[in-house]
Amino acid sequence: MSKIKIPSKIWVELYSELAGEMVEYSALDAVTTINEQGDEVYTEQAQENFNHCSDIVEGVLGQYFIKES
Image 1: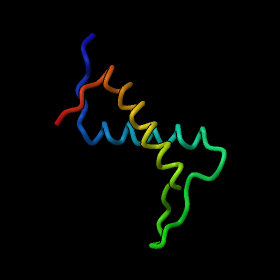
Image 2 (image 1 turned 90 degrees about the horizontal axis):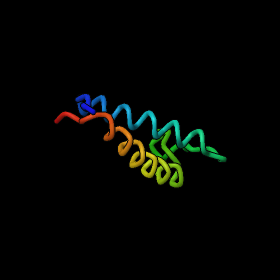
Image 3 (image 1 turned 30 degrees about the vertical axis):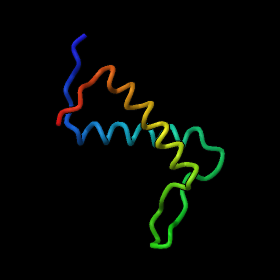
C-alpha cells in the first residue's frame, strides 16, 4: 500500500483534533478548567489522557500517511 504524504501542519491538526475528540468522548468529568491567566486548558487528568490518545492516533495515522518535513 502506498502512503499519502501530508504536510506536518495537517498531521498535527489531525492528531490533535482526533485525540481531543477521544478525550471528550471518554470523559466522565469536565475535561477543561480555567487557568490563572484566564485561559481554558485541559485538567491534569485530561492532559494525560490527551497525550495517551495522541500516541494512539499518531500510530494509526502512520499506518496510512507519511508526515512531510
